[in-house]
Length: 343
Image 1 (cartoon, rainbow, N blue to C red):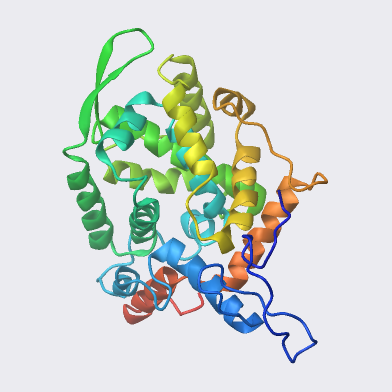
Image 2: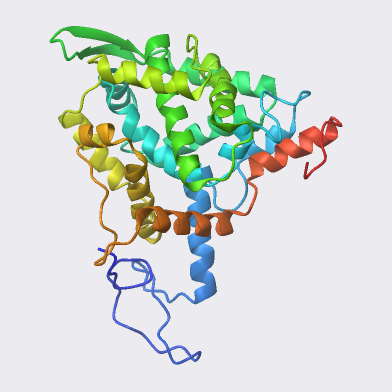
């Protein structure tokens, strides 16, 4: 499946004139037939990555730049566990794992299928989620609270009924504290697990990340989010044993959509590796529920863990060591006299 017929991984038109450099045929755009040189191809690829994560390929999103505003340090600071985890590349894999895990709750999945346009605009939904995560991570307290309030207002009309595993009809609401608890714990577990595999050290250890990110859960209406890794593991066990989670045809459709996300053809080979990494990071019991197994990468088995690390490294080189949200946050802290730019 790794074999491609051109630079973009799609069928290429017949070659045009050979390049004067090394006598090779430059790669060709699959729709226009226009030849690309290596530099323009690289710029296009970089732009597609930025567009996927921020919604823009030419400049940082406006909301990220505005994180420089505000009159306090925010809920999370340089040197915190949250900054360490969210400032690494591991959240890219964690985001995929989060979606897979969250789909196991029929109420959460019903809300997505019945009240969202995830099929028509998946990248738009991704950009909105990234905006909330990074605003809570790097913004002032006012910015974090405003962003969370905005999400909760958008969630207000998201409610309905779903058939539970007990054969009874159950109500769901996106702002229900119980359901929000599942969303929060699936997120926290995914981000921590992925960082353990592909990230660096966590200041204060895993407990510090769970405790610090509990604030995000509280902002989203979660009652008593777990404060230690052990508490989080125990809560996940309770969810698994409660009989509320399930994998049905709707979950299978969602998993297949996530597996074959409608990305630009240039990004699909790397995404295939990242999806494999997300599956690799899952606990075996959830992997079994989702009907997934760690896929083979290429005609010869490649170590998924190593391949994922390599792709994340390439993305890091493309996006730079710091994102615009962190840069804006450091500028705010410097303005307030609370930290040096590289503290």
